[in-house]
Length: 72
Figure: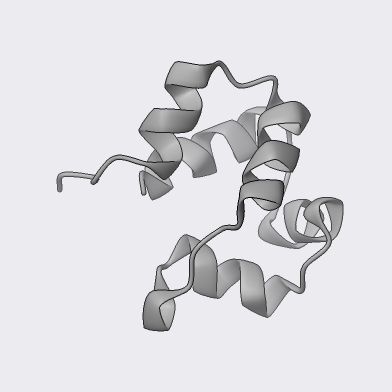
């Protein structure tokens, strides 16, 4: 997962973790676990679709954010 790219999209739209978590129907703590990949937590397909729709992400952006490994 590319956490930086997701966070940049969130900032671009003025969202915090709390706002996006509420928008996709999960708790802020669960969102934090997923964005930080804590204990193997991952976004579900329906959560990814909700984020895609909210930020009008292209298929390439979805792949980059959720399905590629971020290099430090």
